[in-house]
Length: 315
Image (tube, rainbow, N blue to C red; front, side, top):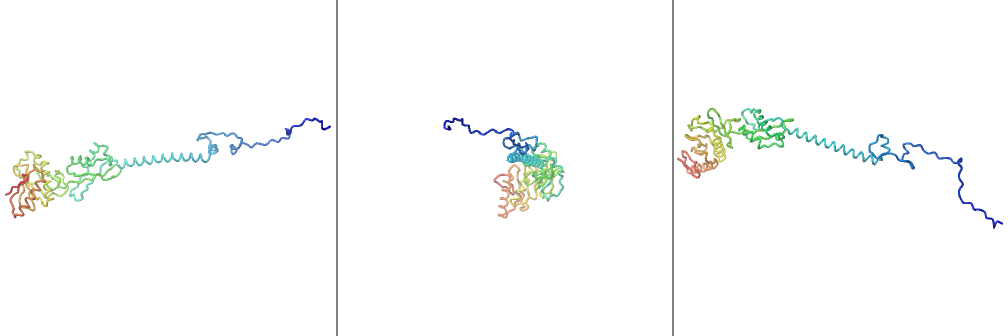
C-alpha cells in the first residue's frame, strides 16, 4: 500500500548543466577605453610626470589637470613678476646713476661765457670721493655745495635737476652776484650780499668800488689787506644799507688802518665811519638812526662816526 511506501525524498537541487551545452560569454577586448570597467585591474602611477602623454590624459581626471595647470600658471606668473621687478630696479639704478656731470647755469642775465668744464671737473672730484653720491637720489646737496664753493667761491648754490641722458646728471649752478668790487695789485676782488668774497665775476661790474687810501705797501701782504673778513664786512654793509633804504656809492679803506671802513651814501652827504670789529648789522642801524636824527634837525655833518656802540660822533 502506498501508505507504507517509504521512498527517499529527492532534494530540490537544480540539475547540473552539461559542459557541452554551456556557451561561454566572450569577454571584451582590453581596449584603452575599457581600463576603468568593472572587474578590471587599474594600473597607473601617482606621479605627475608620465612618459606617455596619452597615458597621462587617461589616468588624470579633469579636476587634476586643472589643478596642475593652475600651479604651473602661478609659477610662470611669479617668475614673470620677479623678472619685471628686477628690470624696473635695474632701470631705476641706471637712470639715476651719475657717470658724467653736465653743468648748466640758472642765471639768464650773466654777461660772460661760463666754462662748464671747470665746474664739471670739480663735481667729478666730489663724486670720486663720495661714490654713493653717484646715485642722484642719495646725493647730499649741502655737502656738494660746500665742496664746490670751497674750490670755486663764485658758486653760490648747486642742485641736481634730473637726468641729462643715460649715465648723465644735470647740475644747475647759481653764481654769486657782486655788490662791491676792489682792485688791488692788478687783481680784482668782488663780494656779494652775503659777504662772500670771490674773484670770478660773470655779471656786470658792481657800482660800488672800494677805494684804498690806507697807504699800506702792497709788499706788506696783499692777502692781509684784502682779507675775507674785510670783504665780507663790506658786502654786509652794502646789503644791509640797501635794506634800510640807503644806497652805498663808495667804500673807502681809510688811511693808516685796515680795520676801518668809510662809506658814502647816495641819500646823505655825510661820510660814515665804521669798524670791522663791530657787527655790520648794529652799525648800519646806528647809521640809519643818526642820519634820520640829523635830517630831522636840518643838519649835515661832515662825518658820522659810529664805531663805538651806542654813541655817534660827528663834526
